[in-house]
Length: 349
View 1: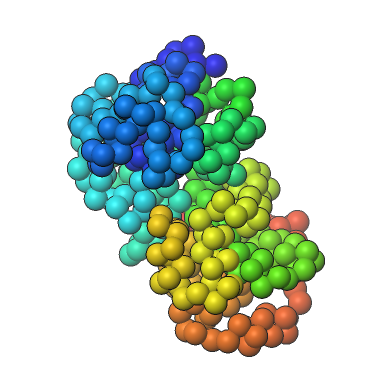
View 2: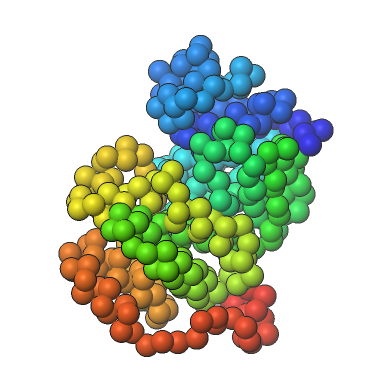
């Protein structure tokens, strides 16, 4: 499935960036992984390991690593961005002109303020001549690196770019499905992190299976309501980038956002929970942004409001739960019959 063997650069040597680069290298795709840390780069080159972000995983010896970003980009036709949202724009400002004509695929799940911008929209601003796509789905890095059967979604209106991503990433262990709803796919990947924090808290508190199911299902309804209001296709949230990603993030202890929530549920402070993780948990920042945007857009998001009240307003958990359970009981499924146009995700943003 890698007949064209297009040269690839992966920008970012964290767990997911390393995993993507390693998967492609293992299938004879000429791929270079860029990262800032000379020590980590040397470890990957000499020991074929990234013990900081992907401990216990032996990396393919064909994986090339560099700390020279300009050189890595110069030889690549496809560029995967796997860098934290907090440094996303600063990196794009450095390399925007080097991305002209290249296929640029964002894997980062976050939202920038001000402006409520998706990462792909930042790419469009800083690299206006690039071809842009996003990659999202139920993709835990450690499982993917271990060869577990996995599926993901590449989203772009550039169908040729989608096919190119499928060719370099698709394998016997990884299925890559395509979507034209780039905004919906990307928004789903960002929003689900918020609900993973809530699910981690619930698990730490020992709630029942009924409660866990209710939380995940209502989370899906809530994030879909918001996404459709913002212009996404509701059907996107029935796929891998919606319900698929939500399920794995809300149920797996491997999820960083779930880990933060679990620590919170055990009584740790937010600061200690994030510090203990040692990696970025995008859901904490996304919660702040989403709370503000939902109020601005007047979209009903009681789970977001409740979690925000617990984390940032220090309201007692019992009071928040009581408020959630006494709220108005509305429709279970909201998008069975909606106006023409909106059903296709054509609402203007």
